View (cartoon, one colour):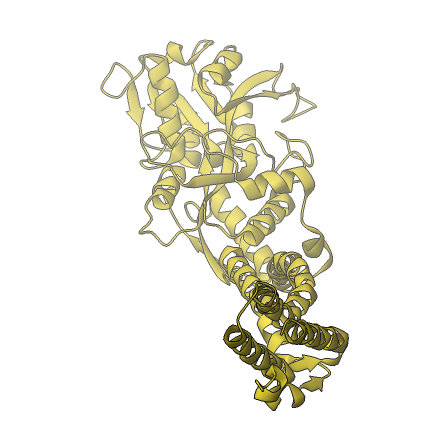
Length: 448
């Protein structure tokens, strides 16, 4: 008598399956993709997040004692309150400042730059944090009444010291009026008090005062000097249209002396603004801090500006930085308004790091239970294909030898299933699989 498949091997009778609360191996493998995604998100966030702002930055200012230099000292005091050291470099003025910024070999982060001096300088990569104050151009002269710079073609003209932004701007404006070095006019390299005193003494005919030279005390002194006149720029609107970095200003009558009504009538002046210019790699937190400092230093009212007029988003020769644009639109961020600077900087970087990670990790880890369930069930489902194959072969008029081989295959399947390690939550599916194995075995026996 040919033995039945059940007699060939007792493997189906040995139940060695183990049930556990959790399959840690499957859980670890299920966490793998989520962990990879989380690590990738963390790496990307770390790569994108700004580093901590530097503790020290360098500003190129102007000559010792100048308006630029005095302003820089005030910036340094304000930044020191927030733990930032501002190194102030003495310079010849705006022209040297912008040249230092343009030269990447120079250890300079930002500078005060008067409009109209960057011609011929490669300014790519330089951005503005905004205009911080006016640098008016005041032209005082002796002699008969003049109506424009073109009236001084044969005069002795003080145009400012060599290397200064005021000189560069004065030469540009004179050239537009047909006056150039080597021509009929005599151009003299003096400025400030020296130029004003030379005009009073009659040593020169015209003094072009700009920026630091055009201080209120100097202008007031010259306005009171007999025989000295302040040029009224009747063509001010034309200047502002030809030279886009210029603005038109009006000195009201009596602004220097109400009792004597000096000047006797409104005087039109032209003026560039001074911009706080930085390299485009300036840390965003420092950008906000510097604009705040500029607001504290330059925000008060004066003879030439209203309170709160500066700093402003008005720029001319340099594009406004993205950080400055955001600041002028919405002010400081929430953290910087309510926390000390360094704590806000740290919290800001932590949030930048955590938010994208959390956004990516939440959906990633929501997939873990589904992936865990799929892995456990896959160990059960993988045997159903083999069972279907055995059942179909048994029903296809197999010979006794073939059925004996099918029985061995079934025994192998049952032995493997009986050794499975399964979480208790899937015990029902385990027993359903064993019932199906028994069902196929019965079908195989019935066909004999």
